[in-house]
Image (cartoon, rainbow, N blue to C red; front, side, top):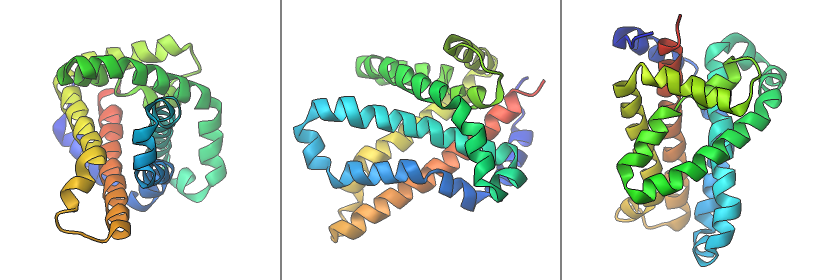
Amino acid sequence: MAYQSASHERLFRQAMLHFPWLFLAQLPEGILSLIQKYFETEWANSPKLAFFILYPLSCASTAICSAAAFIILKNPAEARMSLHYLTKELIPKMKYLILSSWLLGLVMIPATLAFVLPGIWVLSQYLFIPFCIVTAPSQGLSAYFSLSKNITGENRLVCLAAAFLSFFVSLWSYFGMGLLSHWIFNPALLLGIEVVLGMLLSVFLTAWTATLYLEVSKK
């Protein structure tokens, strides 16, 4: 379906009514971000450890948190009242969420290193994979990639905009502390503020992307 900005804006406003639960859905990613930043020196001194442990965990947590947020938005009454419902929806799809996040993460590395724009282009093509996995019947991994690509292909410009937003949120996770350190001198406070701000940005971005998927995937 073609993108309708007014309809998407309405869906996004409705999504913000569930902000506390969306914030809770980002907790795993926030905790991982806290660990990453707290041991930043150790990761920098052990790039192989960061690549083979931290990066896969980061990719997987992003996909799982996005899927959890989408489930909350799709069925807010059930997801808000029952953790059992949320886990029941997530666990059968966990394998595909993790594998797809790792595969996309591996593709994103050379695409982004080659130049930023190819990485953003790749991200825009497969932006909706966590949502496709949650909503579509169980299929092979390639089917979810194809489904996301088909949906984004019909709405290329707005999906590129969403990919740019995702990229800038990622930049915050790397450079935010450097910016805030000019005004905040307490390391523990600086770390806490940066992680919370990163989670807030992730909530808004995930809600915007999830409602975008709900809008453009309408039949």
